[in-house]
Length: 343
Image (cartoon, rainbow, N blue to C red; front, side):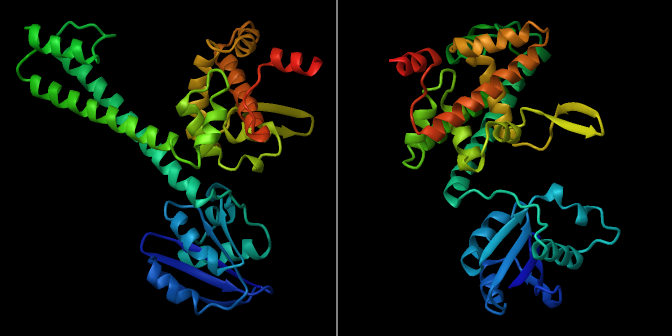
């Protein structure tokens, strides 16, 4: 078996090919294009395993090389301490160290979702960018009105009818900001239409439709939460326990233990930030629709910390969503489940 380490960049890829004994068989650089990779892969010995660090370019390279190797692995960048802590660091050395980690089975491998899931996840994350820009534009509208001393209804400002009335009837609106307000309103409208189109296309996708329908049977789980769970979690079978899923979602703290001392730290930064944010926002609303989650919240809230109570609800949501995925059945409330079991 030959072990190939790749140090991936935008225009070039440094590679190192080693045999099982650790001897360098071949090394050099190749261009980061499909045509050059096709020509390069034909020059490599077989059988072979390939490893690379996770970067923005990794996805397409992984898909392109997968049919040409026994295995293609992607390393977690934060856990490649051998490279990050090295005194001497360059592309050639990085490729060698990745090849050594692969050869010695020390590579901190990270999960690579299927191409279909990654393609749809890209759409969902693009939708997040659209929403972020829309919120910024709404804040800019408020800022323009406050800068010029215009009195307005904060809750109704972004309603189309109220906004048009404000521009047409309120004489306090300065002529200098009217074009900016109209341009901002048009941008918000376009963003809203784009948001609807992106979400609708994902909801109607045959690959996701059935799973999303089951996930939304959980009280408090809406279309965005269901989509985020389905696309960010991907293959739910990679989580053997609920605790591991909770850890991946960033809903638990770090642990620092030494001898008899056990310290619980703040929420870990090693998490999927997209699903963490969505689950926490969903947890704040879910207590209105699910009395079981409301009980969890109140029990933790009695101890005096609302944020910890919200985290407890988010962890419970993870347990519900993972159970629905595993059983491939609609969510059943606890009372109904007990009644069915007793019958």
